[in-house]
Length: 150
Ligand SMILES: CC(C)(COP(=O)(O)OP(=O)(O)OC[C@H]1O[C@@H](n2cnc3c(N)ncnc32)[C@H](O)[C@@H]1OP(=O)(O)O)[C@@H](O)C(=O)NCCC(=O)NCCS
Image (cartoon, rainbow, N blue to C red; front, side, top):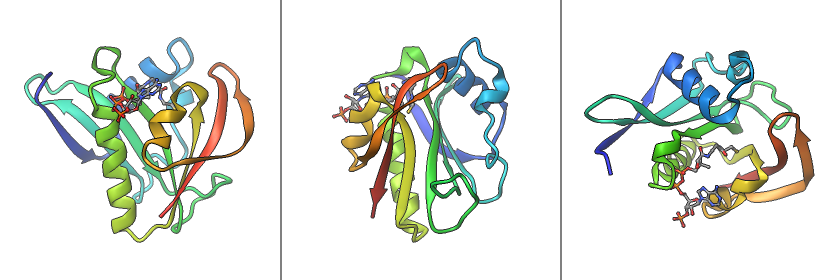
């Protein structure tokens, strides 16, 4: 396993590129550029290879309420993406754990996300619960809204 560093960075093209490659390959890159990405209160986490500096995993914690409006008391996880060759090595967990830690530190009591059906266990293992029914996101399949209350 490569030696890695987890860090919080300003939004940049390496995040956009990894999101695009993993979440919506073939679609327009604009699909993975989110409206709140560049706000000061947006938090972007990456795991990078210590030696090569390649970004292996990314995830963002955005200041959005359940309707996607900018807010200060809730946050939303978006753009969780791990490079194919790096999946299953705990990097997604590293990012999710840091998100939970930062959310608690910032006194935010509620996190939500729209999770792909295939990865519900990834979030469930960290205390997220499904709310509501399955819905389809065109081009990326069935999703569930999940929330975590602290
Ligand atoms: C989903 C994803 C972010 C998980 O990151 P990862 O680094 O591969 O996962 P980890 O190695 O940290 O595993 C975390 C836990 O989730 C589970 N998990 C990871 N991916 C899973 C999957 N596809 N299905 C079910 N469980 C999964 C693992 O078993 C592991 O459990 P453990 O903590 O008990 O060992 C990553 O695989 C990915 O980018 N997948 C493709 C894009 C995607 O689906 N993103 C999420 C959109 S909502």
